[in-house]
Image (cartoon, rainbow over all chains, first blue to last red; front, side, top):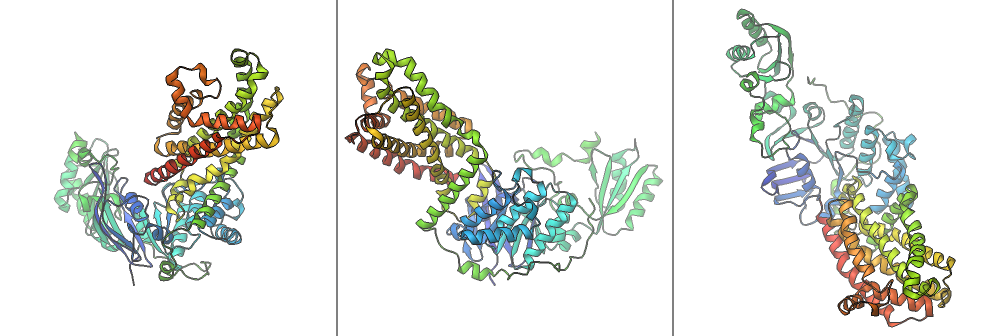
Length: 333
Length: 287
């Protein structure tokens, strides 16, 4: 079967800055594929190139075997795009929006009306059907936005950070909706900043950092690369953080990451039992601990393990200083 | 952030039951390009969207309602005596001039509003859909025909209220209005193009003003050309606005279809032929 997405060496340059710098991506049909990365990593830019919204500066991309560069018009018939910000018309009601998008995609008046009613029902928006979009909550807008992408039932759906800014309950609903799409035969390519979202939804995950792919695999592959769990230590007030970091490194053989604002240390654990060894060692040298927890790894830790730097904003492409921002020594100084 | 691994739930019982999506069939059913009929249909849908917007924001109509009335009265009483001796004999010269001016100013709003509109999220979706690239530009312009017509009718109406009696009769006046609306529509492509290249709605407004003032005032709209210095007359005589004003005068005041009508239509067609493709091109380039 043809892959839903097959891209090689994708490049997008804005002046000297390469927002996407040679990414290969293969998404088998019928899967949820997650693209994980911090702000400014190039996720949205990549999606926009694949959706014909930005010209491709280098490399090749095919969706279901159709060349994105050569046949943009066909591509637009195959892909439904839902962006980070709701792209529906503020001046129209929910029904009017869906009917307009239906008409624009060649549905008859009757069909666009029926499709609009069907989608509003499916997304739990019947009651808001004739309300102005300006009265919609963030979650309702997202749902309407997704509904608008599904009018012609495209086989491939791009979701750009579908749950950023949503409350946990709405987020869960969105996840269910995304799973339903795949159960229906769609392929979903989604970008996210949340490891748990990728973990929950995606069959495969690609991690993008500064325009390049730094890792790809199943969620399990990815997490095992950073250790089974993470030790989180909050030091007691006045404790020497640098000294504590040295102790942790001596026991675990890995330098812990220091969170500057709260005096917290975190370090990957191959085995959760090792946490006890760390605590004993800290006690022996007289360093106080306020709280201890052993958690599953977060996106930050995945990033630290994969790229050697944290997953902070990367909006400033010229700033190599970003690399050292959370250097333990600098924080302690 | 701790991330618990939860088993992926089975598809819900109430999951959609309609037929599954078949990628191969979807690829096979794609069409290589839009037909002209598609483009026309998309444009009309976009025009419908624009009229809905007008209905929900009636304040957009203020310029079209107030300007023709205000300018007609102001120009008639301020310049009437100086230029033609009295207001009554100035009206046949001035009303077609105001007609051209109001329609042109209304076109400017087309560009400004397009710029505002293009910054909205919904334009991202328009770009991602397989619709004719010209439709998001042409649609609002079709809807704006309503605005040009309103402005043109009000200008004549106000003129008649203060004593203008067009000798061209109803047909002559209708002809002048039609010509002005068509010319306005063609010139709106210039402002639409500015809308697609400018960075903000304010920039569109500023750039359009720079274009609008010379076009309307360096014409025969308000003063007899022979009172102008020779070098200026040369410009005034080639200015398409002058042709529109002369043609509208001939139609409304004498009921004659003069050669000026031909020149005006030619200029309008040339403007469309140049600026419609330019607009679509720069609209598509925009990120």
